Image 1: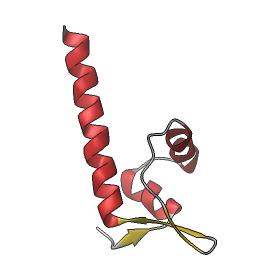
Image 2 (image 1 turned 90 degrees about the vertical axis):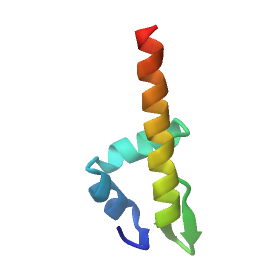
Image 3 (image 1 turned 180 degrees about the vertical axis):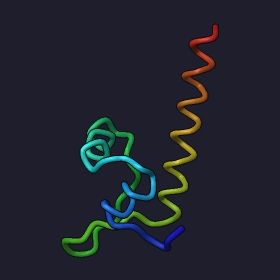
Image 4 (image 1 turned 135 degrees about the vertical axis):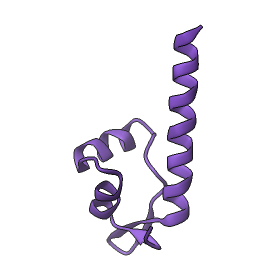
Length: 67
C-alpha cells in the first residue's frame, strides 16, 4: 500500500471508478481528503480507516437483513 493516494490512484487501488468515488463522497461515505494546494491526497491512514468503516457498515447491513 502506498503512503498516500491521489483520487485516481485510490480508485485504482480499490477497483472502482472516479464517478463512484464522487458518489460515495456526496453521500458522506468517502475517505478523508487532505488538500495540498490544488492537489487532493488521501493518506494511507485515511484509506485504512475508510476501508474499516465500509466493512463495518456492510457487516451491520447484512446482520440487519438477517433479522
